[in-house]
Length: 304
Image (tube, rainbow, N blue to C red; front, side):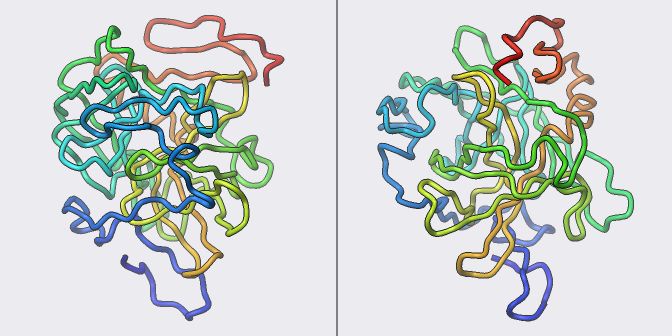
């Protein structure tokens, strides 16, 4: 784990989730799984058995992610600790500072694994005027679309505007936090940031504590894994972020940091539009979805 600055020992130091510096981030890291308070396989594992070669969905009613569609979260064919998130038939969202696998695997939890070659990666994406470092956002383009018959569905993005700070509508929202080796914990938005330390871009932070059940603390190797908002209609979750770093002391005053996907939506769509796609988005204001094929009713706005 590399510190980004040398500050007083009691100061909060930002720490990479990967174990290497930005200049060499595409090398293989040492991986430590996400920490989850009171972890149990039944409650916190996406899969009950078979991961990563023949994964079976965790159907235990205790699972905190039960009832949600996790098929958009894939993993590297060469390193099953690494995650990437499908946001369109051919597009995946990743952390810019971390690995760029040649092949990604996806599964609906039925024991079948669908592997796709990545045609290209592009990043960093987004403006960082006034900052020394770019946003931690990159995207990959699959060589071919994910067929609908696989049951793999791109993640939907909840968009409620671009505001930051304590008045942001994203502030205090609950999340499911995904980590290395397909483990799932809990988080809640602590701050919504325009830039972070020397990095441009938009970010969500969320605090770790030692007492809240299922509370997640990011570790080495969790970079690029997603978080999802679980507000709104039952059975729906919405892509919130991509893990970037942690900062804080080495004990319990630690904060996870995600690239704030909804606040980077314009940059995501700009890249996807090059190949004729747009991200699928839902807003509580219109209660409508929008993607490359058009728009339509999403559901009852009272759910929001």
